[in-house]
Image 1 (cartoon, rainbow over the protein chains, first blue to last red):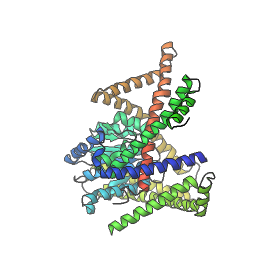
Image 2 (tube, chains in turn brown, green):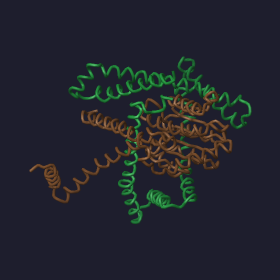
Image 3 (cartoon, rainbow over the protein chains, first blue to last red):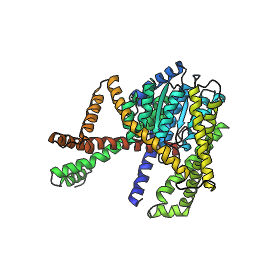
Length: 273
Length: 228
């Protein structure tokens, strides 16, 4: 890591930290100020879970190959929040939700998510820890996808929500779900998996939308605060991309003197000569 | 008591998280002047390495938890009451395969089983790789079925655009060299270089931003996962 990258990393992180802290406090005080835009997948989720409960069939959630202690740690944590919101709704049914992972480091996260979901309904004693299942698979494993297709059939799953890290193997799982008339919502932090999810899911979560699950399904003010913080950072990023683009375009139109024109204009605006 | 535990967990996460972050950014790179001096003074790098080693050991331990989970879950499905026959058979095959591979691995390591290539390598290359390759071949058909389903479900602008682009990509992959095909190839190249690349970068930037904010939330103790 060169020193410029080191400084940039620190600046970006501190900026994210400061914005998150300030915005969260602001949203806590004025909750109604920020209206979340509609995300069809989150609107559909409660209905999907309700249908599965009525049919006495389990809801299946999967983290794919994301796990803790690797580059996908935060993706796993964000998806665990989504799955917490889902399992919290699903535990009122008789069929226990199924949580599958292919990275062993995600197994404690899966079991903890189930524990918290049952604890939130004061039924922690009936938490089925063997509903968190590990199916071996390395990276984007077809073997893991095959295990999931068998799970969909064997356990008569009612609804599938797949998040975390999936590659093209997601197509096999989604196709198996479609064949059995099981609804599916999928997303992935991998582009190949995201593309497959776009085509094969009943509803799709794109890119960072999965990180907003807590705000949409749990509606806590700290979660909404993080959505607002992400939006602020997004606008900053757009500005950072746009300003050099405008300067580069201007330079190409004004034979390289656009940068000087801007400099002079800024100096005049700030009261300089 | 639960509140105290939650506060303790949050405090540990904040201290260890921030320490490791700054240790990785400041301690393992170029000289950043005062920041590097400060990092050396408080032994930032060596303590960060200790945290990372603990993480690696914990992750390694989870492999044992995973194997235990696999056996418990599937033995429960084999011997549990009221389970369908297909479920029992699938789980039984899985348990036998898992135990078989573990036993083979142990015998191989202890020198009882010898041979070149090693039996576990034969299993991996002869069974797992072949089956995974066969499954990978099915992905194309699953995707075509997915495109069909998407159009059957709802004909929208984006679905139409997707189907058009898919057809164009498949057509451009045909091994013909007519002038018309060259134009299709040019359109394919432009699509890949401009809109596809821009879209991919947009999605990745969005994920990166959300990951940064999620990391910040974890480090300031706002995340729920270790508080409840």
